[in-house]
Image 1 (cartoon, one colour):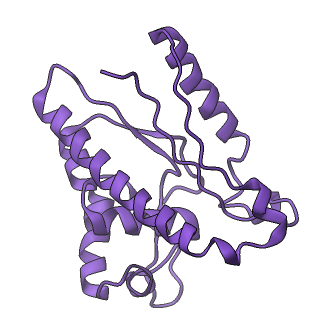
Image 2: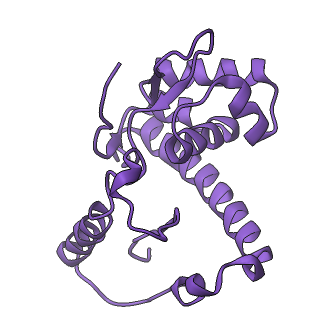
Image 3: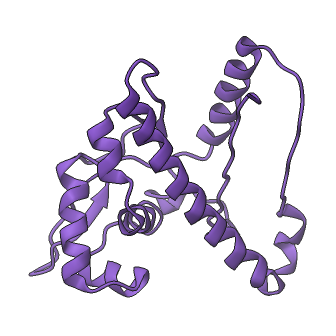
Length: 189
């Protein structure tokens, strides 16, 4: 069992991407990433599935290296996420890779749309001190391939400054809340 989370995981194997491209697995990995180690029963209560279904999907996630067994708590067998972030880039010479990235991206977009819809439906519950921090941003601009690659690296560097806070609560400043940044950076076709 690893004691630390690894950095961003790059997904480039079509088999691994297809294993990840399942709505329940995406929800399970999301919960383990943001909430920490949990058992199949605990996961089931959060994702609306049976413990046996969650156990099956957790084993698939472990088989492909997304999660690993956590520290046992008596008879409980929790699972933990190995990486806090992932990126999927297709091998454009491999049609299976392109299809796998497309399937994973589609499910990720559907999950994020669901999450954002839930947030907006409950935005009135947001504490006043967080109201100015909410942003739905969109920008259209002209850029070269090198500029887009640089922007992608800069966005990752901005997010890196918050690393470690999920697994180490003592690093969180007073008043900190879990937040999500979801972005796509793509040239128009």
